[in-house]
Image (cartoon, rainbow, N blue to C red; front, side, top):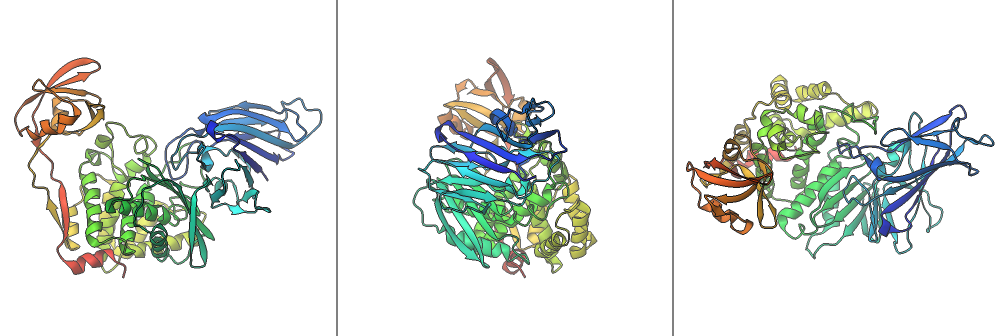
Length: 574
């Protein structure tokens, strides 16, 4: 089918986008079944975009009304057989209005400052029909001057914004930023790279373009070819935001505009850029077999997010280091955070990486107060596992880059097929041998603990542990004004043993009132192995429990280089 999408943003303050789809149905079909995706590739949660549709109409090219009905939460059937048509007319116009007021990288947001349009959240597709070279035209207020997207521009005039793509999958895989965003760009390997920045941030001394260009150079150098004609970085700088989503030849990034002024925050931003850009190869091309072609209405399950996100989470910070954008000390500080997050997650004892991946739809993307006790992040543990795999490969004179080469060659040989786990395991065995593969599979398929200290030591690094022997309560606080709320309770912690619950409001300790300004002060005066009476409000009832603080679990304070030659060899490319 050949479809044309007309997008109109008439009043940004209403947050509404009007979409009109015109085309011609095959003469043999009596109906067409339209759908709006329920989720976005790269973000594994049913987001139910259909909830934002306000109304739908359908008519023929001469204006006759076509019968249509909603069949599921996000699907609509347009029927010619059930329509009272005066004459046969296979051309149609399906029009709907959709509310767009959620600013994330996986949703659409329209207000008087800009429009960010995320394909799956507003562009309908048609079941059981291939879409060839769909076209998209966009109209927006004259106060906005720029449109940034990875879609192919076929506009004939400067004031017309007209685009096309190969198919529906490619059409919705290119986010669009419209407004008065700051734009820039650079060339690499003869290809244009576009930069767009929305939002405000305080003055800083960093050079975004120079550093992003360096990341592009270093990442693309890891592979034998660059699989796009041009690439677009769309960045939103908004207080409190963090996230990224990969696309075929672009990425959408969000970062806290207050975080760019300190060194640690800026390195986190660069790692996010490297993470999403690396996905251009790993995920958008190299992928588990289950992730394409997509079923946009239902969940797409895979046990291989250790490859999609774990490998990428290991590479992002390594790439920042390899690009010369951070020091060894700064890189190791990032690893301290990664390791401590992993070690403070009791759920690692219950979910393997494969389990975590398969349950992404109900666990990772739907966290609750018990998430840390029931599962483990395939980003976090996956990145650590690939760090350890690289260390083992280095001991045998190999490296993770050898695996990247095999993964990329596999994609080039079979670009439409995807990989299964056994194929990846065979590559690891080919590079590192059976012993390395056995450990790698164990880390992925079981909950067996990883001997992190030994692996790091053999790679030229040494752990320095926290020596502060302060008492540990075992819950994380949340605050509602001055009220101290219990956000979550760690498994087998003193709070867990005492019977404290997530959602409890902490009222007093030994009858002394607890409020936010004094909460940390109260903790300073507690002793290990001494009983304390905690008074909490639970469902509006006062409850007293006895809590005995314990020694805090061992945490890593610093990772030091014990053998500089080994350490550098572990992280750099041969």
